[in-house]
Length: 332
Image 1 (cartoon, rainbow, N blue to C red):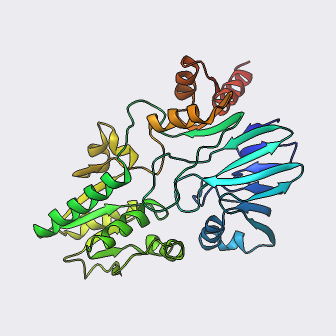
Image 2: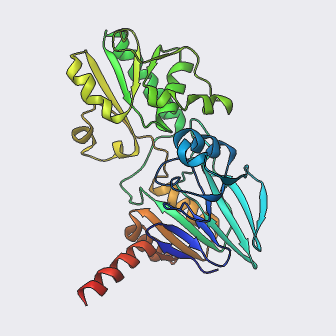
Image 3: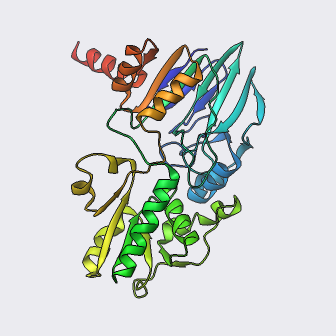
C-alpha cells in the first residue's frame, strides 16, 4: 500500500483516506480527541464513539458542519473503498484507537498516540499483528520509563493527603483532556475533596458516560479551596502563585522522568505517569506486532528508528527524511 507522509497528516491515496489530517480533507480517520490529531476535518470522519463525542464538544463549529460521521467501536470493522478498517484500543486517552487497514492482503496498523500499560481511564491496548506498523515515539529514548497506573494512583493520593494533613493545598496540573480527568478520578475515588478547573470539568461527562465517575467533585472557586485538592490546567499555575495561597505542586507527566523536570515545572512532587508509551513499551509494541516494516512518527523519530535498526528491524522516520529532503532542495 502506498503511504504518503505529509506535514498535514498521513495519506493513503489508494483508498483516499487521511490519518489524523490537520487540514480540510474529504475523508479522515481520527485516532483520538487531542487537537494535534482531531482538527480541521470536513466530509467523512471515522472515529470511535467516544472520540466523536469529544470532537463535537471541543470543536462544535467543525463537528456541527455537514459531515458523514462513522462511529467505529473497538473490535468493529467497516468496508472502505476496497479495504477493511478495524478499530482497536490504544490506551492513550478515552476513546483513543489504533486503526488496522487490511488491503489486498497487506495489514497496516496506525497506532496514533499509544501506550501499552493499562490507563487509569480508558481501554487497555491490544497488540495487533501486522505487516507494517506506523507508530508514534513521543518518548522513544531509554531515559523515559514510567509508573504503572496503580503506582501513579498511590503517589497521587499520598501527595494529596500529606499536603492536606499539613494544612497545605495540593495542586495537580492536568491537560483539559486526558490527564486532568484521570487525576480527578483517582482523587475522588480515594475520598479526597477535589476542586476542578472548568476546562477539565467540561469533558468529565464524556468520561462518566463511559463508566469513569467522579464522586463528590467541586467546580473550582478561588474563595473555596481550603481542605481541597486542586486540579487545574497548565496556564493556571501563575494565577495560583499570584494568589499567595499556601500550595504545593505535583507534576504528573512523562516529562517528570527527566532530570530537569523539577526546574522546568516548578513542582515539588514528580510523578512519572504518562498517557504515552515509555521506551520499553514502544519496544514491546514493535516486537509483538511482528511488523516487517516500521514507520516512526512524532517525538524522537530518528533516534528510535535508529535503535530499531540496530535490532535488525526495518525502520524509518519518514517525516524527518522529508524535512531533510526539503532542506537539501533549498540548499541546492
